[in-house]
Amino acid sequence: MSRSLAACQGALLLVDATKGVQAQTVANFWLAYEQELAVTAAINKVDLPHANVEGTLEQMGAIFDIEAADTLAISAKTGSGVPSLLSALIARTPPPPASAAAPLRVLLFDSWYDDYRGVLSLVQVLDGELRPDTELLSAASGAVYTVGSIEMMRPLGAVPLPSLGAGMVGCVA
Image (cartoon, rainbow, N blue to C red; front, side, top):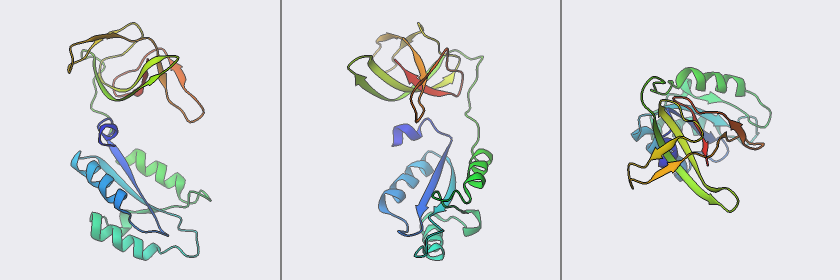
């Protein structure tokens, strides 16, 4: 989780109103806080009859020092409050501090091996522009790698891209 957060400028703190604040939520909040990410708080499942919205808001205030007025109430099931949450995420999350004019710098924050495509890496372009056939030098190992293809990961499948610009996150083969 901490490597993935390194490629972010903001985080969504989503707490279930029927369960309250969970241990994993606390741990992930502190990872985001330590990386100085803009945290947007939301409470989900507010539509359920057994939801303890007030108690959960009190927990969030005590544990995370988040004001109840700054916490958005949503129901992912019905869609209630979701448009406001998306707008708040855009408004509260700063853009990445990236420069297209600077030399290429890339942050690799996750990778895995695919039997058919080889090593796939999730990267954020910190500066510059990343294109296929670009040679990358690993700061850790000194090894040189050539970018084969670039794609944007989407829930319905990957979308091929001609390049990744400054501040963008994508998958590189």
